[in-house]
Length: 521
Image (cartoon, rainbow, N blue to C red):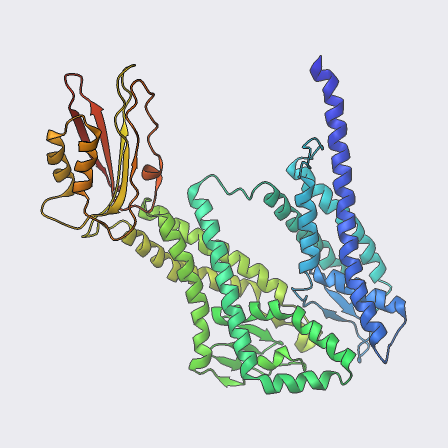
């Protein structure tokens, strides 16, 4: 009876939550479009030579908003009179709409302050938020068809849903506390791939910034030649800032080896610049290398993917200390594949056509950048992962110990044994540590003070801090749980399990010593 009464209410609550999420998605699209329209109209007002009225400025804002989502635009007002595609999207321009979709999807699964607000399922939240956003985007696509920058319908049908759905999915994943796959190898591969991608982008940004600083004079001349009045220079400066993430991706692709295209038939790699580049005047493009063979300065860019592969492999090796060598190698290959997929997506987003003819190919080639990232991760990252794993499994000459003692269940009314934890580094001495502990334990009495004194005498004063925790002997108390940290710590090189058990025939304590060493491959 209760089920029949509550079922319609639950269904109605979820339907209302889906409708609310859909409206929120539309509002997020409107906020991003409105913010960009304000910037474009402000630039139009401050321009001393406006070419069109406010309607033209709104069409430009709509086109730039679509371009930020990866949609190619078509320029109709060319000198030749033929339409020319424009497909390089400023990645920084895409930050605001992607963040709005992400935040909207994340807040959709928020139960609220009282926890009684109905929430949709994770899949329903992604579909509702993306659906509301795409409804507004469809209206913008139709509106742009009557302006100077109409949208290309093919890329609008491909990139726009992919970007919006991906951002909404990332927001739901964040709302669910970023769960990773249950398999430890897959989770470790994803973490290493993310770290390697960040290192690759950071290195690409360093390469681009260094080249721009090296050609600062040429970049300044290009900047001053594009616009003479202050409003035009502010607009060019904003465009340069919006394209800075693109420059980082280009620098990463340059270091990976395939480089990037500067028009059909022209390619820039660390080995040199070949072909006849078709480069329009722009400050960021002034950082391109000169024509001819590359020098050691250009070859130094390969340190970027090498560093990314080393960081990636080190992350996998630290996680795979207790795994078999085959599992560690497969995890390193999975991390290389994940980094390659991320590099391919970023390269596709950072490049595109700037026109027809020679300008139809401009920027990194996505499949070449992705394949190069996979090769770097497999060729350099996998040996590093295996080496770090082998180094972490070694038994050093100066033994590093984690000693813990825990009581075993005792009969009711019997005193509970003392629990002690000591963590430190014991210097090598005559005889092995387990044999010395076993010999010293043969004459221990039941007094807790003598037991602790014996343990402290076996461990010399370490160089680092020592944790010493004692529990009082309480008659009839329940045994304390064994500490799980010593058994679960993957960083330890040697584990020793000491169990102090009350002997039934007398007051003496027996000691069982079982060294737990990492399993062999």
